[in-house]
Length: 275
Image (cartoon, rainbow, N blue to C red; front, top):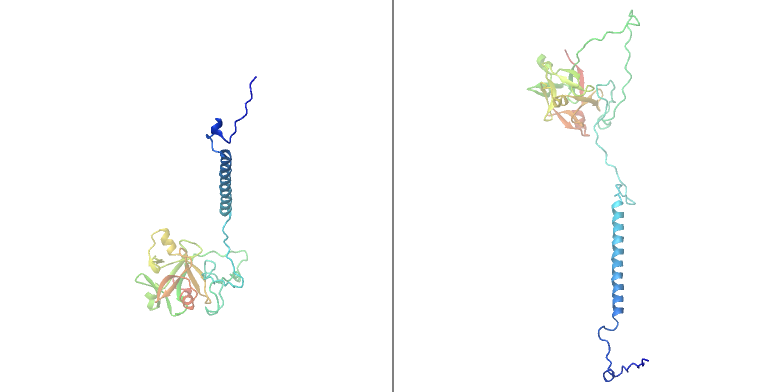
């Protein structure tokens, strides 16, 4: 039977032949546990921060910027008046705007066209007879509003505003009005020798057509209502908002502006001329 020996006293290990275990420092397991908990806490904190930043980025990217202007309380906003050129139907209509000064009436207010008048029936004619259409050529002279004695006049290839002097000057101041080369609802103006009036470098000239699309557009102008009774403004087809006006008695194409001088310089009477 094995004899149980009592553990020697640890108070005097060297005398009793017992020595403590020095291969492991006391409390090592507790240190490992504390370190593991600290590392887990740090990892959890970084994970929470990363998730919160991702959610914030997603919300920021999904939010669309507001395009509405914020109006501060107590401030009154004033709208800037728009400067739009006069509007109207293409073609010379029979309506006439009111005879008010340019400062009292806006040039861009279109007037409703009146109902076409019916031709009175001739005595003795059959009620069922229809009139036969006749081929006619419309010749026009273009007279200035603010210079009533001056007309469009071709001189050295340019169109100027000159008074009529003699038969030759009268012929150069009369043009054949035809359907617009680029827009049939507008107008083009041809001279007696077959040239057309077109803007070139924003200056009106008489040139012979080359069949190009650019020439057709340069030579097409659409009449618009004017501030002056019976007068028209001529707008370019390929430069909307630009109208023919005289400056230094030379016809030019310039952008529309609200001024009494511009409204007068760009308003013209289309009157009949000799064939």
